[in-house]
Image 1: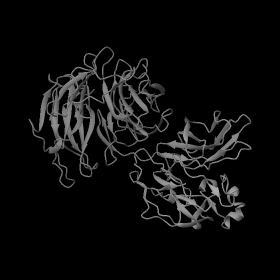
Image 2: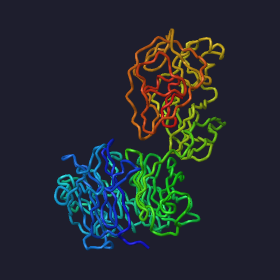
Image 3: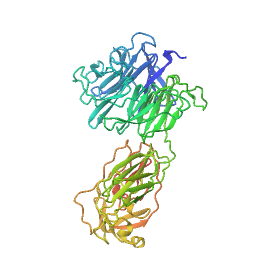
Image 4: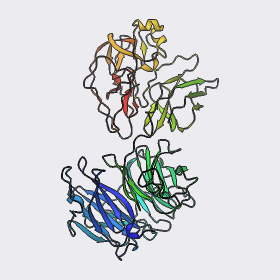
Length: 631
């Protein structure tokens, strides 16, 4: 057994980017600040004893723009740790060193007691868990009498001002989560414990002037009630579509809800950790970063799931904080369905380090490398149309793919997703009708997307009018018109330039895209053609009235770079054979590399893409591993 005073609970961070990183650790005896800048040399900077909170103590931070300071709010509930006043305490973290070369000393206690340092605010026994977002403080009471108690911090961070609470029957508010700007709304998700659901509120207009005791409007009824669970905590995917709900009753473990329509969430799957069939462990808290869910799973330690296909999450990593705390490969403890082990984790440090707080074993600092040996590749796709105009797509199984999606275009330029989260290797499009169709299939896992080249399904006997592009999110481009067959779209290099031998001798083709050319060939632009708005255009095709644009495919965490201006360059369309360039690997944080100046020839397949996909021979720039590559 363990005394209450030895338990460790919540973990949070405070950092000065590029300088120092601190773990804000909630302890059975109080609040500890630990310098974790160097994981090989961590040390405690300050420990402030607090009353109560032997089981429940939590912390959250608030940046105050008026002072430029960050404050930590540390609250408690219960008297198990001793003392009768489990209160809320605020800390001014600006006293901590922000100099990479000058750390605070061990137990140097840089934050003084009292006003201006750290101050006991009262609010007794109201903090089971805590949250801060958009200038609001959420004291989550885990009790129907109060639910979430919400305060304004913007007027005075030293004196939070009460606004409203969400209490009521089945409205416990064990925890809360806020995501700003979901379709223009700031949204509060409340884990309502015994209410067995997440309730959803629109808090867009809640601020210091909010009418006291007015509960903001609820959006729909919340997530569907799941029998037997205790709605403990939740976290939203980065695309705002999927809510991951954690059940501490050990009935279902982790539930995934599709919240694309906030007013009508739909439960799509339930999953557990990989050993649940033989060793019953409880989940506690989880966070999403990128395409991975990091779950503190009590005795099962930290478990990491690839959620790139949220309909089929897959465990891809773990840290045995409870069973093997010294990491020697031998299990010192078992999994016996108790409330011990990993309590919380924090995967958002700028350094990339991940903090895990184990209730008994203490603080772990770990890193997560890619769980896959190589970047995901694109599938090879074929299409066949039957007499009823149903199109059957088939593709090869891609190693480490967690799911597939299908995109379709009816004009060869603008694509829409018509199927996603597929786990097989076939798809039948029964809604296309008697029109030409162009398809791409995307293979996905936590590290990225592999997009196939375009496959074309033409209606027999009908002359098509557009050339397909290979860009998953391409804007409209000009039709490809052959100089030896003006006015008609080219669906193959033969149609455009005649036989391959003739093509290699230099026959012209205009507006032509790489996916319609043979193999890995480089398209240079010289002679009688000219670059117009990123396309190779000859005399048979007049310049467009509006410049087309093309977006490079990128991961959710990267922002597209600004498109450089291209000046026209003399060109003719000549196919020359070229071997693909090997794909270099690069750190996860590296942004796509932009071309320093407009090239006179295009970039071959596999080359690092600039911000303008028009620099690629293929006109297409896709995510390959962690870099954009010409496809």
